[in-house]
Image 1 (cartoon, rainbow, N blue to C red):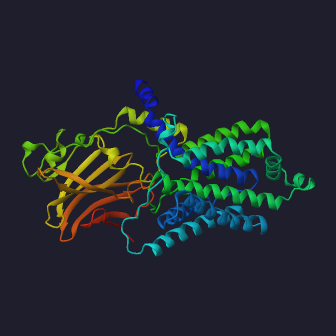
Image 2: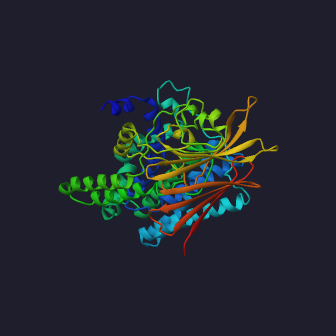
Image 3: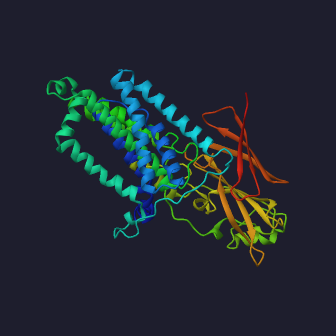
Length: 460
């Protein structure tokens, strides 16, 4: 109980909760507008991917950050208009249309990225929104303007829906379209407007990932994050069409569905410790490396070279409490949310090895860090350089984004690293819960900091 109270009293935890919840708030509001009008929009995931890509691409091309948000919103409106044309104009299946838009928007975004950056191994970065340090409100001043926008949008949309004639007409169209038509309300126009407006918010939700949470666009960035919103929204739409006696039971089912979709992806915002806390080679073990012991001089010990294999330990009780609390709040990690800085504690790092050399005079070396936590693997490649005293420090750290996200669920074993003329090659056996054909994973790291290739090997 004390651990839980310590986490609740930690401002860093609430900062992370707000940041993680921002795209969910925006996406939920978009789904809410569509479903209040009586239309199920299953294209939310694809629209979020398209918004994330187009907003980031606009800023990378030189547009201001808010212009990028506007481009993402416009992208969502375009796909929303297509969904409205198919479902309202042609009266096609809302499920088929929504899933088709998800596939179309996702494929177009990935194709556009490959065409725009055909020879780039690492996604180009931009300067994202800065925290609102000028705001005299604790926790909130560590967020960006998009988070504040999402929080202010909640009461604004609630006021429109329940305190204005427009909101009354929108709800009437969703609950009883015949009554709305009898009052002279155009059902087609109201539903089209709601879908377009809701899809614009979905696009903005995607832009938060690339313009605020991170500074680049990469594949599988959204990766199922909208499934919770679609599932909960579908149950909510059923509840709206039931009698008052059944709504309580439907709400229980909605909570259960949301909990089932969220479990396994919970992440806790725990304070990190300095890099010196990373398990290091005991200096007395010699240059060959040996079973590691905790040492304050990690980089100094690792500079002696050799491999380090460390015994995994169980995660702390505080991590469990934080994960459970994140589950109750409906928050989970964004893709690549667990960077190297989050795994500097010895209970998470399970394998570290120095391998190969890089740099003009081959004075630097590579360090590969493997983390085994939450039933999946996280892998980081570091380009280590020597300072004037000969000690090693990380000049650059690259997270293998294909592994470092909350939906990968890939577990690596039997890791090995070997040097090549152009860098290093890391190989490992791989297991993936929903893909029994994945057998091995190979990562090739080049001499340029951040340069790597991810090569999965599957059986036919």
